[in-house]
Image 1 (tube, rainbow, N blue to C red):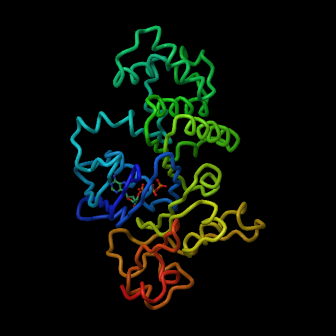
Image 2: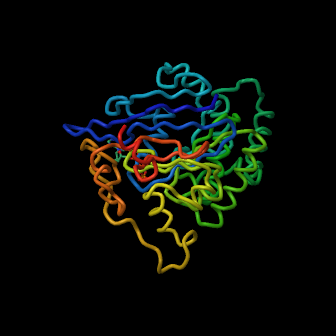
Image 3: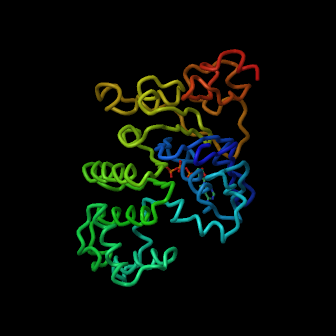
Length: 325
Ligand SMILES: Nc1ncnc2c1ncn2[C@@H]1O[C@H](COP(=O)(O)OP(=O)(O)OP(=O)(O)O)[C@@H](O)[C@H]1O
């Protein structure tokens, strides 16, 4: 059984008289020790999906439907107490702005120790300091960081602290939401490599939310492509990069110079995301798809297996029998 099983998940935000469906019928499995990149342009629902898994969506405005099983437990049905037992210990997250959540007036080590103690009380002060310093060293930070204040660290060092916090209790699943986006390319590459080493050692699975396909290419085994709240393609990264199935994935890859030849070949996908407050008729990408057929505007394509490891939701790939569904 997969570590994380997402089944037909939909999330709608209700604000005033508007209802925006940010995630629309997504199903996805993450295996133990897997690494899955979730890509898509801004507003495609990547963060909403992550927040739903973490149960961090605003209860008053967000309505969640579907099922999420984590280690067999129904995440959407757990009470606060059960959830707080899972968070950090089994399910941890690093946000792009995680660094902002540290207090500016306390030293890094003391803050990490406080977070550590929330879940593990067995260590005395000296043991705890040793544990935290070891953790800092595991993300290649020097021991002196323990006694520094957040403002004394560079962006890269702060993000390493956030990753150290995420790894602190050796979670089974780590979710990174644009966690390395703000860093320069060299620092980002270094941090990703170190993180992957640690994951292997600690046997951690990872979901990585990013709009940057090149990050997924180097740091993930699988990729899930999202468009306007829908999961349009899923499969092993190298297969998807070499042979994308969905026209949206193709467009996304064509806008990257590193994947498709010379710079003057770069082109964005014409058009913009549809209005998420309107009901979707047919394929959600049809208006921007240069291959759209009449059926694409009438019938929603089913999320269909293309091979054992690959899936896509496209009438062009699914063929006529799927179009009829
Ligand atoms: N708290 C909220 N209340 C209302 N609407 C929201 C809320 N959070 C997100 N949305 C809307 O849901 C849609 C998906 O947003 P989301 O942040 O999940 O996408 P994303 O792919 O992560 O985008 P980005 O890469 O810009 O973070 C957007 O239309 C957004 O405006």
